[in-house]
Image (tube, rainbow, N blue to C red; front, side, top):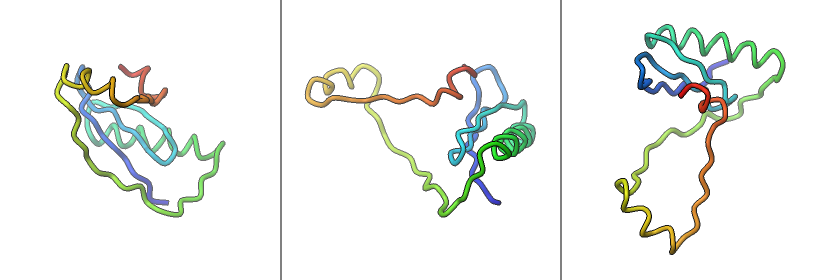
Length: 91
């Protein structure tokens, strides 16, 4: 089964690896280590929670307002922020 991996440089060094299909998240000192750890974590997850992948996720980018300038727009629109709980503990 082919799944997706999103790797982000960690502030303390190394990489944070995230699989969007399962939500599994891990880290490693190198890209290779982060991917190996993500593979292991995802395989363990899938043993308990089987997954049928019907389509690949779409990965794209988007822009946000510079720090401080977004506060002016919040009065006009209500914003909802959601955080991945598995990512929070790595920070």
